[in-house]
Length: 344
Image 1 (cartoon, rainbow, N blue to C red):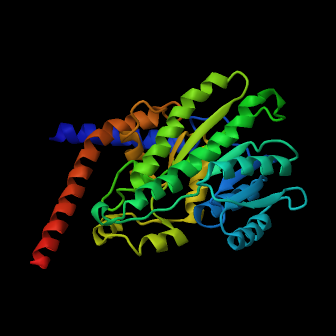
Image 2: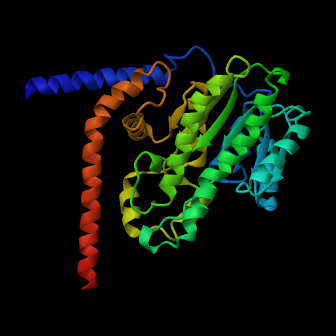
Image 3: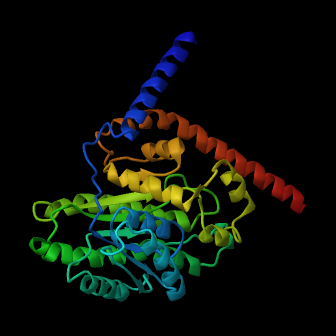
């Protein structure tokens, strides 16, 4: 027993040392996500995480164009975003009202954005638009199956497709030779599906799969145009969207989520941008729990940096996540049993 504890302690020390070294930038040489002077289009930028990311990018010198449906929210958000600019006289800000679930709208967005951006396609796309409609699968209307997939997956897939067209059709015409970036926003629920998210989780898993596939497919064009894909996996975010979710969220889902303390939009934005600057392809924002969940689900996905942290955590996560799932299943069974007894 003493020997086992010694080995466990040694592994923990190694893991924490590697994690700290990585988070301090030990496995990177430079900022791999420069935005100063570049143009970023951000969907879902009128509120929540999207708006917080846009404000942070403005503080870093980016020109920002936000996309959402409601004009009033877009106008209010743009005032806050432009107020965060480090060079108000030279940075540019704009919004486009659009329904991102329409492929035609995505084509219109890139056309209008390119014209606004001095006839140059924007260099960075960040997809933050999406929403959750929690509920038990059997209680939800089947119409929500399509709606959740359109809102969380198709909306991002359509605009990513529209953006890749000009990037790849005329790569030599792009002024900047810096890497182009497409950033998708998935969810921790794509790494650890939880009761109550039977429609939401699959749509976020699909986003991860799209980004993973594109990260390989875009290597076909690498000699002419360097395009990188990234996926962010936030946990609970204190946002207007969360307030709406909680109206239909099952009690058992709320109970399971009690251990997730949640984060502000600003905290998630800051962690996400830092991950992008480190060059990470898959970024979790929920601390060590998120890191472990991601490592346990990597499969053949690319490891961040040298892959040391993800690989070491993955070894540990193989055992830990089995226990986590058993604990979650036990919680759900007990909850179901208690509910049935109350209904008798």
